[in-house]
Amino acid sequence: MLMRHAAGKRHPGCLPEPTMNTYGNLSIPHPFPYQGSKRSIAKYILPHFPSDVECLIEPFCGAGAISIAACAYGLAKSVVLNDLNKPLMELWKDILERPNQLVDKYEKLWLEQQTDQKEFFLKIRDQFNKTHQPHHLLYLLARIVKGAVRYSSDGTFNQSSDNRRSGMRPDTMRNNILSVSQLLAHKTTINSVDFVEVANKANARDLVYMDPPYQGTSFTRDHRYFNGLTYEAFAEALLNMNDRCISYIISYDGVTGNKTHGKALPESLSLEHLYIHAGRSSQATLLGCSDETIESLYLSPALVERLKIWKPKVIYSEIEKQQELVFA
Ligand SMILES: C[S@@+](CC[C@H](N)C(=O)[O-])C[C@H]1O[C@@H](n2cnc3c(N)ncnc32)[C@H](O)[C@@H]1O
Image (cartoon, rainbow, N blue to C red; front, side, top):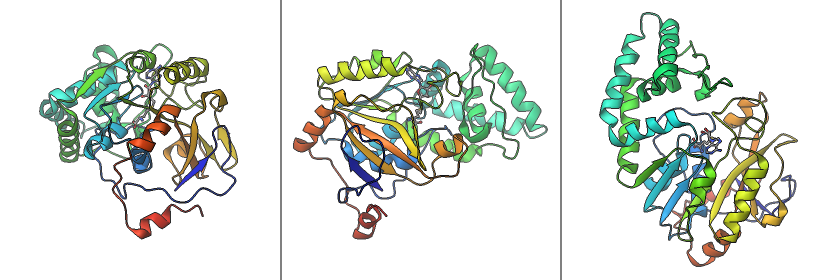
């Protein structure tokens, strides 16, 4: 469900405006499990894409759920994927350039692990920490608890394995990775720099989708993500993008039960603030509570103006699906 509010209002306590359209039940492949992936709410985000997007830029891409979904629906001519986590972006390079070799190596690891999965995981984690091989990271991502990447303060990958599961089966992994590769290869550029550097390259025909780490995690001393950013650096980058009339969308904080996570973005940015009422998210699980999480989506002023001219290419869903969008 999606609700619309004036920018700066912090709690979705009042009635939403009438319905908006979604992409129905999107079926999009994912390249690896990743905590914080926006795959399940992509259908609420894509309808805010104008129909003339030249390049979609994801400065905090993680598993790139929104870029994959956008390419599946022909909503961007080219894509820039970026994440500060360098080994993750090396994995992305293999997905785009050598998907078959990558999955062959994954399959070999997955089969080798069968004798003692716990011990094998620790061995591969050690090897990954020494050499940063992409197929080792893929194996670790498939085996860790809820795809939740954890690094120690010295940059060592230290998450434990989920010993109740063996990780994604190689045939499923192959299907997913080959599908993602097919969607993104030949139109995607990979970077691994601070988000500001790629955001600075955007122009008025592009669209920047930003999903920074939750303040409840990386904005603190918690090392759930590879690295963090400060609230001030983020707000300053947004101000600069406003000055350059850049269209951007931000998935930012959330509301779980009565608790709002994170500090609101400055009202002076004049962002349009929407709430996605998406059920109990992985973020609620991450934060250790059973309440439903309502995620925030912010649209930049330039995007709001552009959407009036370049109407979104929405695949209109049936009446029943529209009714799902009414706030209950
Ligand atoms: C919430 S996750 C993004 C998840 C992604 N939307 C998806 O669908 O999988 C945030 C990502 O930001 C990355 N990150 C943290 N600080 C960053 C920075 N300063 N610049 C670029 N990336 C950063 C983290 O490594 C993490 O992968």
